[in-house]
Length: 378
Image 1 (cartoon, rainbow, N blue to C red):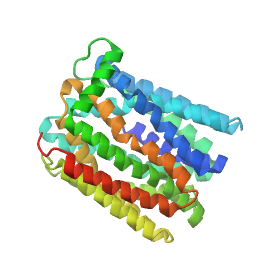
Image 2: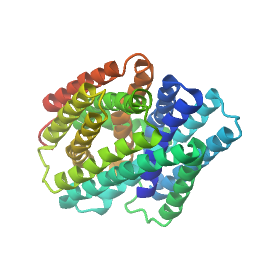
Image 3: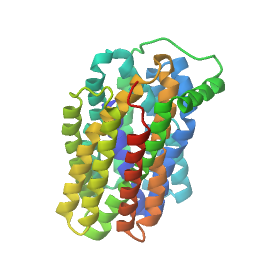
Image 4: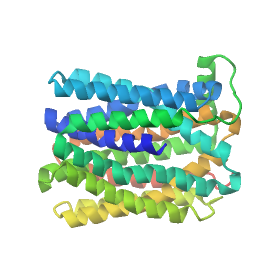
């Protein structure tokens, strides 16, 4: 999990930096990020059905192999100066299509293995898998790009995915198999289950809305650093690493707090905190230290968000449906990120401040959805 998430954090940043450096276009960077995520969202119902039918570990290995191969191909084409925009978009989209197999597969292992009374702490560890990756991934990616270029960074990421595939190949998959035996029917049933579950349905609306602001933020910060501050890729990586350090501490502390019945408040507070953090970055867009402070604040908001989201989804999903329901739920929750990235690529070319302002408003709307619509009881 940690190896794959490290690679995932690196590739998200390297794709943006590759597009900015090779094609000199924030719009291409935003579109590439959109294509890196969106195909997987549409494939999620089928991926969930496969996970419930065929197990999680082996399908995660398949995804890691596909991701590493696609990145190596992009690196080879870029090195030989054969990479054009349509080909870049196509390979990125292929890589993103199978991602739900590993993202959902690994996440659904935790509630199957860990006793229910320890879910908050297990979810803190799960979340910190992302947080640790967000500390080292961007810093490592930015450093490699600064020293050797984006192609070298993509080769390194491909090797990390290969190591993740080797590590995951020894996993024993707990639990039985579920489903009707008809793949498309199982995928459709998973979609219906999520839409009828009031908690999962509300999370899909609120968290996807919040992730629109995350997509805007993810494009705005690198452009702010590269174009306004005159910094290099390593500076971008260090800022995101700083956010990850703050998130690591926040998640560990929040993971020790019982969350039953308080998950909606955790999510609301986290979204309000993220909005306040974006305000700090917006007001300090001319000052690198203030932007760094804003990144720390964004990291702090990670703790209550991740623990509240993961635990709430686990508590209110039937274990027999975890593969299908989690795949659909996670896809819908993340659906806003590629939308925000695509918007960010278009908006930051004209105004970084406008992109951050929209991110603030969108996050406030998501916080209101969580506070008013999420049920307080299981």
